[in-house]
Image: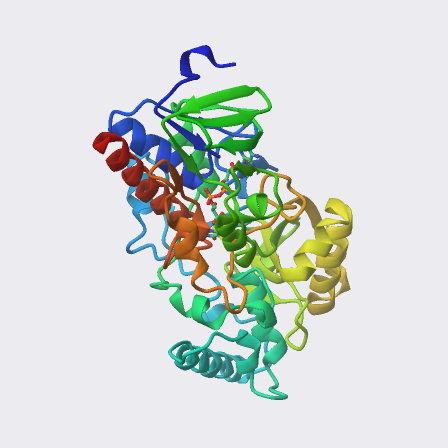
Length: 414
Ligand SMILES: Cc1cc2nc3c(=O)[nH]c(=O)nc-3n(C[C@H](O)[C@H](O)[C@H](O)COP(=O)(O)OP(=O)(O)OC[C@H]3O[C@@H](n4cnc5c(N)ncnc54)[C@H](O)[C@@H]3O)c2cc1C
């Protein structure tokens, strides 16, 4: 294949946020690096599409921890528009789903639950977060629903210790042109071979050999920047096998989250930046963001098993569920005012197989194990390797820079 690049110093496997960061950092350090990417585009789980004239993020949308997120400055340097409005989950005016007084009660129950998790995270063993729900608590279902949005998984499969390790400054910005568009720009001039589905990374020989659907490459080092499920499910194999890495990936599965966008006729009747839950007494509900950026659009967010199941129905089936929830809350006249624009389907996406990683109970220590280099020539990046910012795009980005620095050190020292 790619004659000129078939023997580079470094092959980066996967050109999502982590892979793009790793590629740029290797090139900046003077290494001859190339990325191989299965899709026909860069960005992976960061993906902006333009539908109905709007730039819509099917994957990541929020620059979380924006006051220390390096991508805020990167976006501004690229002349993208950073929107600093409060997210609806922090905007006190946005609590549309609740009876008077009930929003405060929910927030208090949720805060008490998080405090119990925090306290438990300091204890010796690891446990499922669901153990710390108040028995019979009025808000348990909604607290669990929020876990499916935040963690991609229900609380019974969420490690308390891993959850406590996540660090969020609670400052959240957005890129008006799309978070995915930011990564597309960052990848634009990189040496990325698209449509290259990697099947095996063979590290038995003097050089590491990467087998792809477009031929093989050999390199002095490889940076693996793949989603955990791709490795756990054997879509990309190591030869000789790396069982500790496979086990780490299995302990850090990607949960599920999906978005559905609806165009709204007469959107001015909805409060800008409002937020509505499909219900407050069930776990399997959507969270709806009204008029993001002031657009005549509703952005629906669905997590966990519900998100995985909804994408099976295609755009139409997915929209039926979402519109049903909205009509129950807003009134039947809204049915004809809502039109589906697009939806994500990350669980069945063969190059993601899910949305973002969480640790299963007992597996909180696997992120560090996944991040460890092998033989000074196989390096690991990707959101799941981030100690404090896992599950995010900036965590992925920083992990790519970290893995590249490790590769540069190793190759320069040789
Ligand atoms: C619905 C949703 C909402 C989200 N919201 C936010 C948010 O608001 N804020 C936030 O910070 N994060 C959010 N995230 C998470 C964020 O998108 C991810 O954590 C981040 O983009 C992961 O980057 P990555 O580089 O680790 O992995 P990926 O982006 O998955 O990159 C891996 C790359 O490897 C490629 N690949 C896979 N298999 C192969 C193969 N066999 N051969 C070659 N290449 C392969 C993939 O195509 C992909 O490009 C969200 C994600 C989803 C799905």
